[in-house]
Amino acid sequence: MTVNQLETNARFVGFLLVRSADARTDKKGGSYLDLTLADKTGDINCKYWDWNQLMDVPKQGSVIKVQGLVQEYNSRKQLRIERMRAALPQDEVDMAQLVACAPEKPEVMRKDIEDTIDTFQSEGLKKIVR
Image (tube, rainbow, N blue to C red; front, side, top):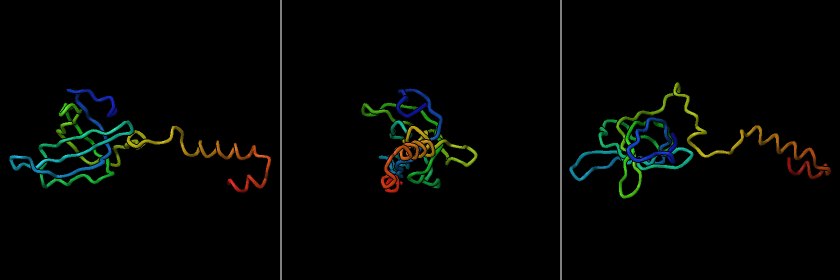
């Protein structure tokens, strides 16, 4: 499920990219994390109310696995995180699902460009664009 498909009261478990993460204190003096997490379709504000100050704050640009419930706050969707952890190498996260990217692999696009250049009649022009 992607961020833009999240519906209120839906459960979510998956990997998301950390756009921002800040440790905050609520009105009662408790600690929580305020995060903005994203995939290639968009981002969502997240709260981790049960955050322990002994835990590391995720770094911007890192990938984390989260489990939580989608809620609505001030007419916007918000993910209430119940559990989270850093992504591990064995998770084999597909970064193309988290970051907007070109529709084709770079090698394919490069070959298309090279093939187009090969059709140029002017050798001088070929040298300039290569």
